[in-house]
Image 1 (tube, rainbow, N blue to C red):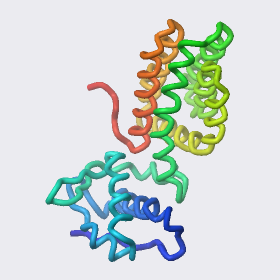
Image 2 (cartoon, rainbow, N blue to C red):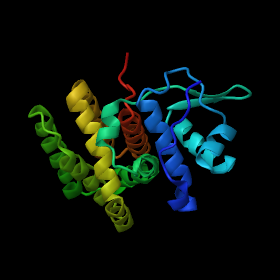
Image 3 (cartoon, rainbow, N blue to C red):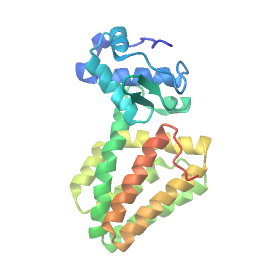
Image 4 (cartoon, rainbow, N blue to C red):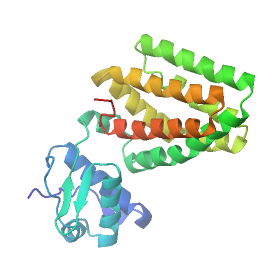
Length: 243
């Protein structure tokens, strides 16, 4: 069984951040090719001993990897590699901030889902025009082969503004760095590996827009949640395209 190469110092890491550090270290080992799909990772005890951390820290790190679909745990058998993100993911991802980045995707699913729900309910004609304009400019960027991260963010901000609740705007502003990093990864990966994904992403944007336009709150929430969850999977290189 391959060993995890211990390259981080847990003594200089805040206890609350230890699961993040272990998460990122194991992820890097998987991406680097030390483990293949189907390989069993070392046990929680082995990982804990190697990094000099408790089993609780290891268990939290592994649970986050499982939530991201990178590993799968089988009771009585151990934890196995389920999916290997591409090396490009680590190149684009912020050093030391991958765990926060993935948690941001999860939080945005809840946050922006509700913003879309309220936007469908409360949007004015001016709000709708702003969302449509952001959608159009993003479409033009796609056609031109541009990454368009700022335009993608503008589209999501326009929807948050249409919720008519400033707390959604303020929260998105607080998440700005993580949101930018997440979109930068997914849009760059789409441009470099599979540009058809940009078409898929824009179709997801269109469905959100249409739900807001017709005032279908539940559909708007569902489409936004699906869109951001798909983005989370795309960041790790998983295909969410229909067969």
